Image 1: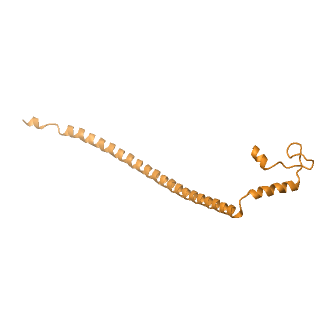
Image 2: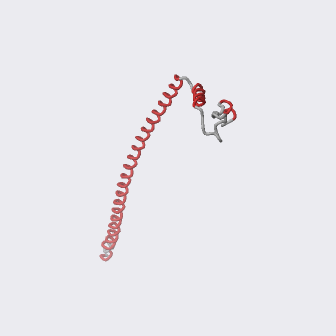
Image 3: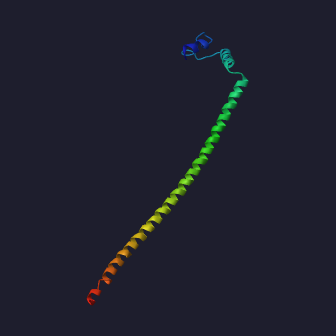
Length: 128
């Protein structure tokens, strides 16, 4: 407790006159009642307290609502990510198939070039 707090709320006394704390283990009910009355008189009036509670409730409901929306957005993004990953896998498979086809076509072209070189050697020179 700070010094100013001690001045505002003096310590409770025991039947022997000791202050509560070390060496005392008994508190009069009348002293506790006085302390509660002093504390409750410092609380705001019911209207202000009710208004505060209503504002806090409204804020809490707004937070819950925004949290719900955020969870929906997150679920939607996770679904989109899953869909995108599936599309990526399909595209990778398509690219691999196209690369394989390209390789096969290049092999055919190379074979055709070798075959055409063999078949089309200039035999016409022999007829001169």
